[in-house]
Length: 187
Image (cartoon, rainbow, N blue to C red; front, side, top):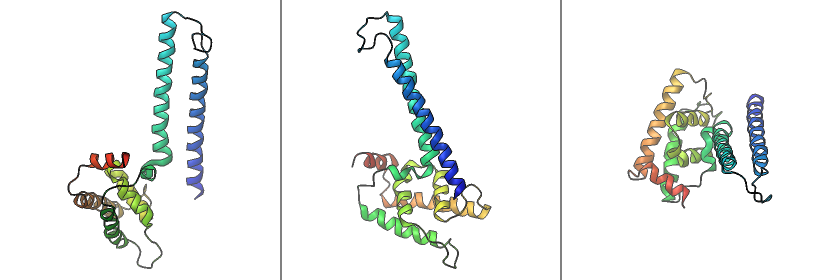
């Protein structure tokens, strides 16, 4: 919708402006005396200042990446993860069984459906989400307004998120979530 598009455009514009500012500052700091291109020895106090600024720019870039994740990708950051490389059939079975539970919450008139690819993303990224993000993803799947759910919708989404986490752990034989994260990083 238009609101989401304008909000995303504004967030993207802010991120791009911050990135541009960081890159400009980085280029300026590289051109200081003592840079290898200029081959001029400088006093140690200038090197300390130079490296302090480089560390500050590095921290700013790290903050920018974190804000990109939260502002632009948010709870659906699982779209950027690799897929689970283990027992793929377990993931498929978990998605299929959980889809049935979600479909029970849909209107009976057939006006809404569950996007199975997004459900797969949710299951795949569950190890990287906190409970509130999982609840919001479930609300998205059910086409409920994640920021203004009714009390019953919120309760249902919380129960579904807890059930999904339990089924996820059961499906992977009590495997630690950190092990699942490691498998996604190193297929």
